[in-house]
Image (tube, rainbow, N blue to C red; front, side, top):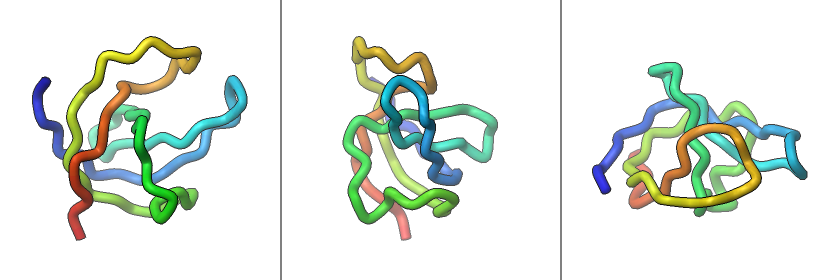
Length: 72
């Protein structure tokens, strides 16, 4: 899988029981499968490195990604 650099803001979507996501500055939506608790804050700005993951799930929102590192 390829590495993705993501800049954007944290969002909480109240769909299908609710989940955290990232709305990228590029207009893309990302759904981290391993978002750290420290980043689970609506509107928080983030810059991180992630990889796309193959994931079957109930959430029909965003590209599923696994966070590799958070840039400060």
